[in-house]
Image (cartoon, rainbow, N blue to C red; front, side, top):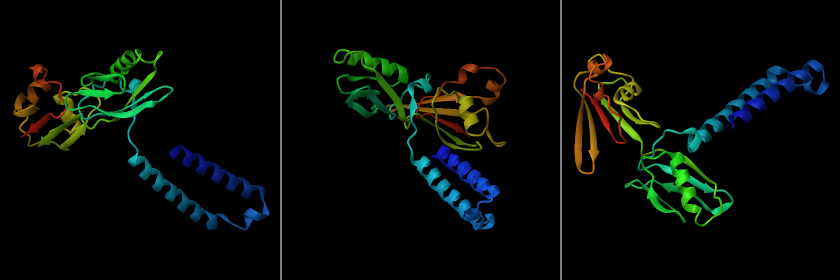
Length: 226
């Protein structure tokens, strides 16, 4: 939409200037001070619809664009099989980490990349189709969310598309405030009904010490900065 808009603006403006410079009588009856305000108004109107339509569009990332992203429960995939109209659908990664697809059955998807899932589907569908070509895209990554709360500059929830450690999560949240207790940070992780607490000393890690504290966060983890 935006590319179309840019081409339209360029074409329209160049044509108007050309006609004016060429001295064509018809266009000279409409000097620039008369048609330019209308032209600008049209541009703003097109921009408004462009931004509103793009804001509501789903984010589609193909397997080749996210080679390292690991799926988590809550992610929504778009799966299609070439020349098989009946095998095109959106698939939700279930709470137990599995997905279900016609003919392929149920299998584990959480913790795997999009390319892994694509190959698994092709392998399973090969029992029913001759050389199936499968395309898997990430439509929504609602499940891969981490939270950073407390004395950081931009607390909130963050959707991540790759493995993120504690230091990187703090960076996403804008870093610590001057009043943060940097040596008493906690990471909360809930597994089923069990709550795990990991301690994190920002000063140690930033000085290259006790680096094991800088763990890779999992979906749903909460970093608490007191």
